[in-house]
Image (cartoon, rainbow, N blue to C red; front, side, top):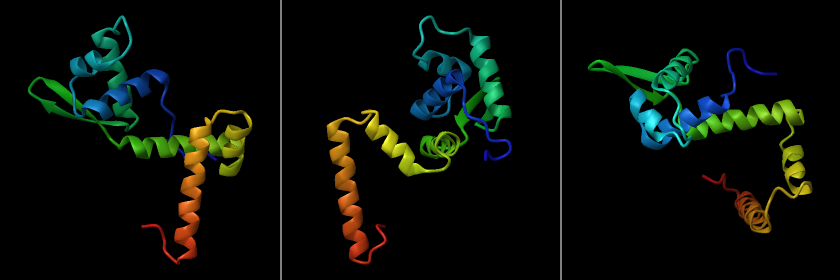
Length: 135
């Protein structure tokens, strides 16, 4: 079940968050300039989206002179972790095994990615057998 108040990012919000994660604290103009889309959205559109993200608690803002400077409220890795957890809960009933099996069965993973996963599993198993916790 989804936690109250936790909402996934829309595609536009995610693009804005990617800019903030990449460049750090930024004004509306800097965020707009960092967006990959052509033509760029209007300044007021980016400003509105940043205000929505602020109300959702996804960005923080500080008044610098006459303009706000926006920054991500959480690091990218935390946001990704929550999004993946939500995906696993909603689509796979909380089963990460079902997610991984789906990726394998649908051939979403390249052979080199599967090899890397196998290597990580072997290393994890070794650490566990040696009594370590992996940290």
